[in-house]
Image (tube, rainbow over all chains, first blue to last red; front, top):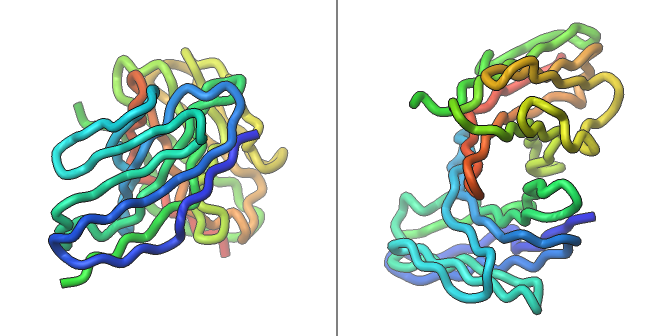
Length: 110
Length: 111
């Protein structure tokens, strides 16, 4: 089967940098995604890594190490609006489905 | 495009009643997913269609749950009979490439 682990909560201050880690177990790995979900909203796509290395999109970057079954999401120049839940999700298995982690609740403080 | 459309947005029903949730994926997307989200269990994949065919329904909780996709622009998730433990937010999503687009969700409360 597929499973993912990520911290349940992270707190940081405005303007800081925060890293949210994710470890996974899956067969037939295709890629690791990150999604953001504000309270009461739907998950929205942030990034996708299929190969090892760092992908940068504005203030957000995502990293993958397939040999370590590990990835992280890096958020820079934190803003209050970044307060949300962040989910890592792995594409894999026999049917190439997307399975989500339990989510990390990020609280950005002034 | 209007994005993924779900209806109803909120549903309150009594235990034992039938509930039908509806989803219209983004036009041109070939894959459709139904997820359920609760505080206890997080975001669970229930079923996944590709080109209107169910590919993986291993997440469907039990026989009370069924899903159909009669054409590329419409899918339903039905719960019959509903139980209080089915209370959750149900999301539909469609996929283009590696990006999944989620609808706004249906908040289901079973009393």
